[in-house]
Image (cartoon, rainbow, N blue to C red; front, top):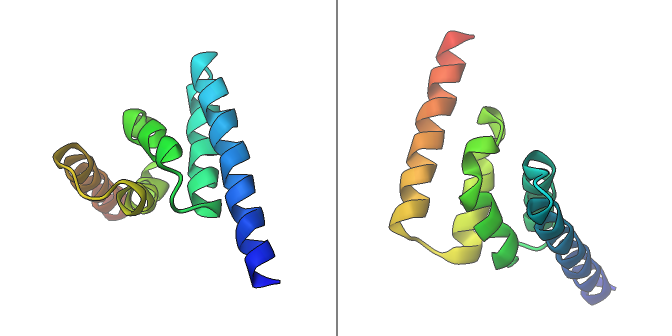
Length: 100
């Protein structure tokens, strides 16, 4: 049963990754980012979704950006662009929290 749940998660993640890529190609970037984020939540190894999120990280809501980028880090590993983007997202989230 747990293997079936894992497979269903990967399949759902794959479908969402494909949707995200299609939305990106049609210029619906906010929807593409949302689909890629959901894809990574379903399948933490969805590298194509992680790359899309990293390309359009500036479109992530401030309160979600750091967590989404940590998922990207899990799928892609550490890289200078990802770590820099993650640091900026964490600083923006801190600034937003201070303003509230």
